[in-house]
Length: 601
View 1 (cartoon, rainbow, N blue to C red):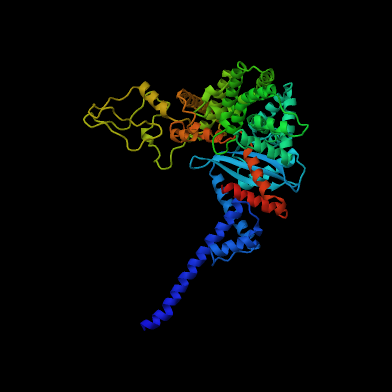
View 2 (cartoon, rainbow, N blue to C red; view 1 turned 90 degrees about the horizontal axis):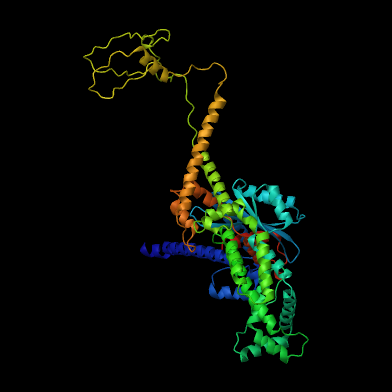
């Protein structure tokens, strides 16, 4: 029997256990393969590659690679699962902010991306990519608005959207008006336009830029020039950095080009001197201009990078950073010796006052700054704008308080059905001057406390039990007492005083809500500012019981990003996916891969 059991049944159990473990291993390897496709933007055809198959055969001999079609189905299944999880997260948010941008692929397919920013239930700033939809229509404000409305309805956030952040293109601004929502222009784009225009207005700087661009282009296009530059860098003990060519639409690339050229000025000059070329080197005066212009532009570059952060609070930094930029430019102008750099500094100051002052009066950025415990009112350039922001904050706080108030129950003039009707013998007729009690109370008995109060006779409770029974009240006392509690007779027709009574109640609510909001706002503003290195969301998580209504507003406004850079990062990844090697990807598959890549990171 034992031999039979061991030979027959034990082997069946072992094979069953082995089969179960192999299935689990295959599921884990399949999930890992899908993650690799998503994170590394690998093509589905990788499972057909000879080298990859040999690697998998050596690493996991028992693992059977899925086919290309099966792998695509796995990605689509994961997309459905992750989208449901993301919708659940967004559903819990009290308020959200959207950013959007447009992009054209290598194959001339247009895409519209929309990202959603909010503070999750754990008190952390979260970003979710709602969609990267194919956009074959004309890029009009109406068409863009329809696409965004469709996305908002799909994700059930239409009533939660607090603000829309885009670039300064006219169709995007008109789209914000079409959607009837608050719109903020991306600060990174605004700074880009300010710096580009300031450089164009600076006489002589454009000529230096053109010559610098030619020098960089020569070394990046000539193999001989590149090798000579490397030799000179080695001989002069300079870092072997490549020169950077600027991109016309981005001023920070101009900064990078100038900074790298200034760093490599000696090897570049020595290389040009030994090469037979018509490209002329920059002079010492030109390099002095570049040096001082870099000093002027350095704070602008740092501010752009800080305001482009995605995982940290950035919208509340716009107003304080604009103030700091103006302060830095004013301080730098006193130490500048080069005329071109001085003119650049003056142009930047004028253009910032002209182009960036509206951020202080915009409700969304002003309230975000006030609700950031690191800045509050000291972040504003203009004290009047700070006071106006406090008024707006108080008004919104009062609206929240009024909304949270439970309306008082409407008093009833009828006798409750649970109480017995009043006794006729104890009522006081209004026609008699003096009430005539139907029963006399001996003075030796304790004070009677009626067990069943009536609508016309008040319940009498003595202030001290040992007090003798009071004598029969006078006519005036009885009349006054009875009159003070007898309700008005029920109105047979429409309630005449309803409108006036409701207006009195509403005015009391508004007055009380405004007073409470003023106290809460002033108490918060009177606290000392926290350190700039601290996280404002941690502060509000600790203070939500002390400032409950301001906490709600903090969740609403601190989730606003300063720029639409999150969408640009999505399109940078899209450029890796939509390539010549993957030219057969349909737009729907591109959207699914981008969704998983962004929301899984």
